[in-house]
Image 1: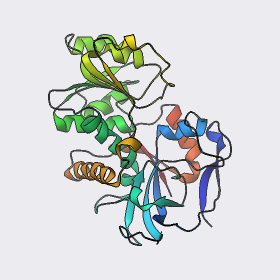
Image 2: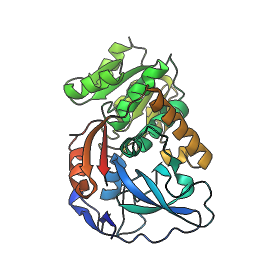
Image 3: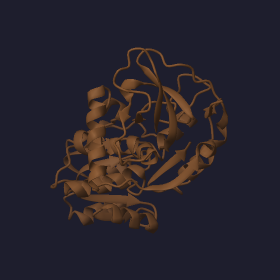
Amino acid sequence: MVHGVRLHELGGPDRLVWEEIPVGVPGPGDVRIKQRAAGLNYIDVYFRTGLYPLASLPAIIGMEGAGDVIALGEGVTSLSIGDRVAYAGALGGYAEERIIAADRLVKIPEGISYETAAAMMLQGMTVRYLLRETFAVTSESVILFHAAAGGVGLIACQWARALGATLIGTVSTDEKAELARKAGATHVIVTAREDFVARVREITNGRLCDVVYDSVGKDTYRGSLDCLRPRGTWVSFGNASGPVPPFELTLLKGSLFATRPSLMAYTATQAALAANAADLFAMVASGRITIPINQTYTLRDAAEAHRALEARRTTGSTVLTI
């Protein structure tokens, strides 16, 4: 019998229930995969609490994973039974087996484990679109990246270093500051004791930043806007401290740009997904980026993983093994 972690009602981590689940057979264009690992991301918390709506309950959350193709639906020719595959952006990852559209999967290259693939897909592809598409970072760019010691942040530090950019990272503790520096952050600000706006002004000699990547939300958006030079770009891609409240457009002083991107929009087509994943896999294969899996839980312990994530006890990536 197949098991998974389901939500029967919204709320805290205790609402995540390990139980038997139905899977079914793949329909046209779909495949069934046996999962080996699933990734943990803050978007999972948003779905669990209801910040992001679910279509119905009970529901299985989880947006990324890796495993093996075990059954093909009608018309699927791009994959074969036994292929090692990974995905990001498709709900249903907290399960031993699942059905998923074939065009949402990418093949895992040799040399990359299931755990690494599960840890890198959502976070790594997010960094790729943020730094290469939402704002085209170059060696001349000055970046402010909040939560620089998180899963997305540590990958961003490495990718920015590979591009030759100046990355200023914010973290909450000295221990996290050391992780961000080792990953490639040029400067690190510990927000528990430093005003990040004042420090950005000091670090840049008043020049400020070309782009701010903000996954924190409510607590940081005003300061983030103050860190941008004229015609700079504020990229809001998360709500770890709560949603950004409505604000007057006059806050975008200096002709600032504001955007709320999502991985799903940047990988909406199979071609876009394949291009993003290929770029990410190439960066990992070259050694310019390593995926730091700093916490591992079994899938049935997903509730404990959520508690650690929300308590800010995690760094880098967290994987749920299956």
